[in-house]
Image (cartoon, rainbow, N blue to C red; front, side, top):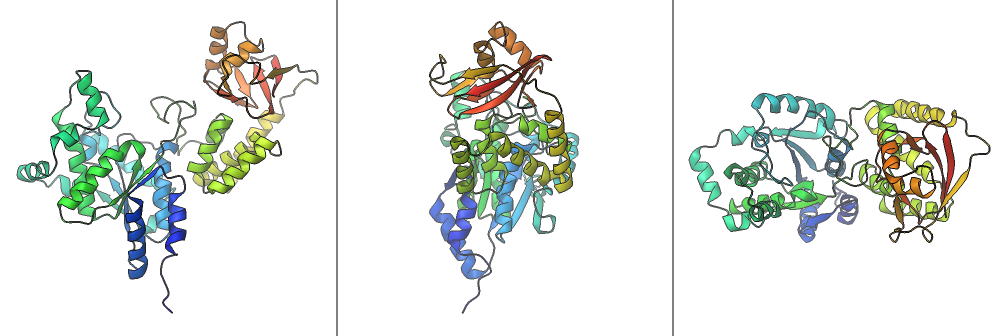
Length: 417
C-alpha cells in the first residue's frame, strides 16, 4: 500500500478554501493538488509584498495566514519581498500615481518585514526571495520583449486605469509596467499558486498569462477578502487610523479588538483565527438565540489574536487587565435602562443603526453633532470599549443588553429588543 506524503486532496482543499474569496480556476488547483500527492512533490505557493511601510497590521495577516495554511499542508511557502517593485509603486486601488520610494526607504522597511512575518510563518520552512534578484538585472531589450507579450488594450481594462482615463487623470508608463515586471516574479519562482487580496486579482491573472507566455503551466490565483478596519467601514489602513499593528503592545491590541462592532466580529473570527466556518456559524446562532453573550465571543477573539502575536501569558494578562478596568468601575444600581428596537427606530430598515443616531434617539446627546463630537473625543463606551467612530453600528436584529457610558457621569443600560 502506497503511503502518501500529503493529506487527501479533499481535506487539503477544505482547509485551503477557508475564508477564501476566489480560486481561479479551482479545477486547476484540484489537479495540481492531485499531481502533488501522487508525486510527493510540494506545490510552490508564493505571496509577494512590497515593503512600502515599516509595519504590518492585521489586514496584511489575512493573506499571510493563508500562506501558512499551505505550509501546514506540507507545501513550499515562498515569501517574496518586492524590494524592486516597491520603488515603482503598485497602481492598484489608487486614483493617482504613487510617489516613488527610495532604495533606502525600501531597504529600511524590508528589514522589519521578516521579523514580523515569522510571527505567522514557520521560519525554518519559509523560502524568502527578493525580486531585485532578477528585476535589477534586466536589460532594455528584456523589458521590450516582456512588453511585447501583453496587449495595451487588455491592460487598460483595469478599473483603476479606466477610472483615471474617464476623469482625465494621468497614467504613468511605469505603472503599466508594474504588473508585467511583477509577473517576472511568478516566472522566476515557477510558482504553482499565487496569493493576494481581492484587489490584486488583475495583477495575479496577468502573472498567470505571462507564465504561459514563457512556457510554464500557469499558476492558480487565490484571492482573500480585504479586512475591514476597526471603523467597520473602510479597509484596514494605517493612514486611516483604523488598524491593529501586529507589533503593538498586547493590551492595546486587546483593547482595539474589543472596540469593534458585533457584526464585524464574525469576519474577524473567520479571517484572523483558525476557527472553521461551521464553528463561526454555531457561535452566531448561539448569540442570536441568546445563549452566548457577544462580549464573551469578542473576548475570546481578542485573546486569540493577542496569543498569536505575544503568547499565552500576554493574552491572559491583557484580558485580565481589560476585565479589571471594565468591572472595577462601579455601575449604579439605579442606572436607567434605554431601549432600541428595529420596529420603532426610523431609518433602521437594514436592522442596524449608527451609534451617533442611537445616542440622539435615547436622549444621551442633545443633537447629532454633539453625539458625533462625544464619540470622536473618546467619551463614549460600549461594554467597556471606547468607541471613536460615530458610524459604529449597533445591530438591532440581535436582542442584547449593552452597558453604555457617555461622558464621566452618564451611565445607561441599553437594551436592544
